[in-house]
Amino acid sequence: MTILTILTSPDKPRPAVFDRLGDDAEVRWVEADTLAAALPGSDALLMWDFFSTALEDAFPTADRLSWVHAASAGVDSLRFRRLVDSDVTVTNAHGVFDQAIAEYVLGVVLMFAKRSVESLELQRDHVWHRRETETVAGTRALVVGTGGIGRRTARLLRAFGVDVVGAATHARAGDADFSRIIDSAHLGEHLSSVDWLINAAPLTDATRGMFDASVFAQLPSTARFVSIGRGASTKTDDLLAALSDGTIAGAGLDVVDPEPLPPGHPLWDAPNTLITAHLSGDTEGWTDRLAQQFLTHWDRWVAGEPFPQTVDLRAGYVPSET
Image 1 (tube, rainbow, N blue to C red):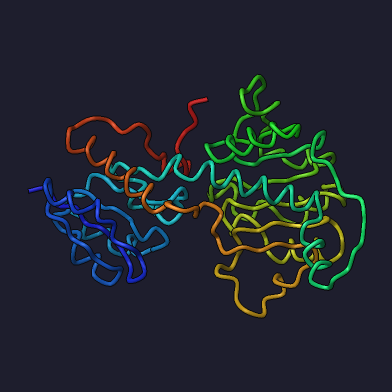
Image 2 (image 1 turned 30 degrees about the horizontal axis):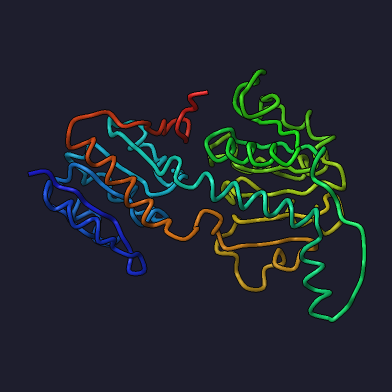
C-alpha cells in the first residue's frame, strides 16, 4: 500500500479535507522527532510544517521516497546534498502566495509614499499637521527575483504607474511583466535611480547575503528597501547601518535574519522601518489553499500524471515559464 508521511508540529492545524487521503494511502502524521522512524517505506512526504529542517537528518532512512511536497514557496530547507542529488521529485506551494505577498509589497510602498506611520503617530498624539506626501506614479522599482511572486508584484506596481525592472540570473528584454530584466550578478550597476528595491528572491548560494553595504550604498538616499524573500539574503548589520546613518530612507521587512527577531535586537528600533512577522502571505484561508493545492497534486500523483511544475533544487526555485 502507498504510504504518505505528513510532517507537522503541535501548532499546525490538520485540515479536515486531508481525511480523504486515507482512501488511497496509509497516512503517517509525525513531528520532527519521529520523522526518521516514519520515513522507511514512505512513498511521499508532505512538509506541512514547512519551517522544519528535520528532513536533512532523517533523510538517510528514506528507502522508498519518490516525492516531497513543501507547503511553502521557499525550499531552502530542502536544498541539502542528499536530496539534491537524489531522484526524488520536489514540489512546493508555487502560486499560492503570489497575490497576497504582492499586495503586501504594494501596501508597504503606499505606506511609505503616503507617510502612513507618521500619520498614525500624529493621530495618537492628537496633532493636526498638514504636510506633503509622495506619489508612486513615475517612480522606479527594481524587483530582485522574477518568479511568480516577483511577477505579481510587478503587475500591481505597474498598475500604479511604477516603472518596474526585474533582476534574475539572465538579462533579457521584452518581458511581459517587467520593462526589462537585468542580470542580478550586476545588480550594483542598476541601483543609482531606484526608488524601491524589492527582495523577492529565493535563498540560494548566489542570493545569501546579497543585500549588503555595497548595495545599500549605491542606492539613492531616498530609496526604500522592501524584503519578502528570505531574511538571510540580507546582511542585517549592513541594513541596520544603512538605515541608521541615512544611506537609505527606510525599509519594510517581512523577513529578517535572525528570525524570529529577538526582543531587544536593534533592528526593532531602526528609523523608518516596518517589521512584520513573516506574514505577508498569510491572508485569510491560506492554510485551506495550501491543503487544496496539495490534494490537487496528490490526485495527479496517484493517477500517474505529471505535476504542473516542479522545483529545481539545484537552482532553488521553480523554473520560470517566461
